[in-house]
Image (cartoon, rainbow, N blue to C red; front, side, top):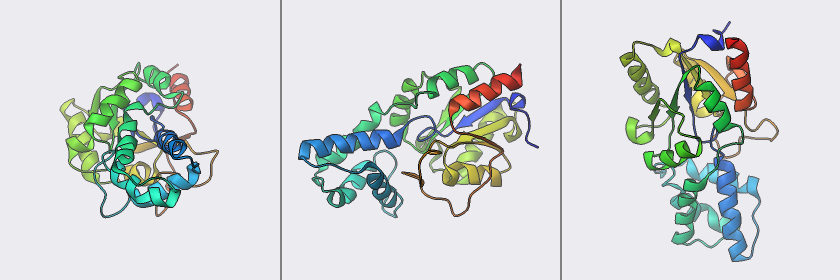
Amino acid sequence: MAKSLSQFKYMTFDVVGTLIDFEGGIKDCLSAIAAEAGVSVDGEEALSLYRAARYSDEADLFPDDLVRVYLSIAPKLGLPAEQKYGEQLRDSAKNWKGFPDSAEALASLGKTHKLIAMTNARRWAFEYFSKELGNPFHAAFTVDDTGTEKPDPAFFQKVFDFVATEGNSKDDILHVAQSQYHDIGISRKLGMTNCWIERRHAQKGYGGTIEPAEFTKPDYHFTSMAGLADAVKEASA
């Protein structure tokens, strides 16, 4: 049996896809470019092409890599393959929205737990994401801070080392994320207790997130951040 939600001191969070609706942000930006070009794009097709292009040997750090990704997928979507549009997609990250329940849930969870962000995004983008979410984090780790991306265990070790400076360990952490590939599988292998936020529960496929080699059953499972926040309130009552 997993520990009670009230027993953890920390919650670590994947940000892009769990708290920030990057799929919606990408689709909105591509739709705007398409409208300017006088064409239309299928959002799910665009995400499928994005996923294939994003996870390549040529990938750069996120979201800077969206320039390269755009130039790769634009011809397949009937969009103009111009640098300025790639930069428009990259810069759209500054305006990506949190899921409707993210900020309120984080504000609630922050009353009982220390919240730590763990994102494969660069620090410049994370600052926009954090502001969108109400700056709820006790600490934050980006790809610029760790020098690597999840699911590399070294990323998680940076966080373990940090909580150790506060006299705690990975056993005091509940890791919360939507990505089976980047977070849920590796957190299980590292002996963490985890919580899967299944954002795409009403949709087929993995959208813009790479499909895992195998599915990992999480310790906790909700389809929204609101569900997690409500469960923590109940456990803490």
